Image (cartoon, rainbow, N blue to C red; front, side):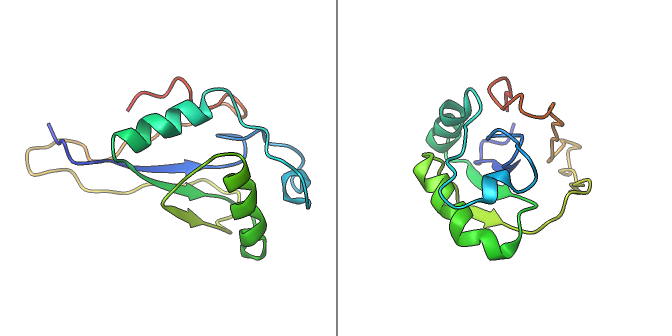
Length: 119
């Protein structure tokens, strides 16, 4: 069993914060509505030393606004990738020589949150 810290790649809107109209969360002075269990799960991952990468379809031009919203909501992360669009996200990785998987994927119902994810 691999004991090295994991890398978490997590979407923002509809996964950790409530997904609203396409541009609603991007308006100035709009506070993000965190989904249940988000802060607790991020704290758990941080305590385990996981590397957290947030991804979003929001435009790169909204980076400063998005970073401010995340900070004000108490969401901390290691990297933020912007502008990936709304299409399917596909993770491709190799297996270890012993055959152990090195990747997992979870597709959640929109606005359900990550509280029940166990990694």
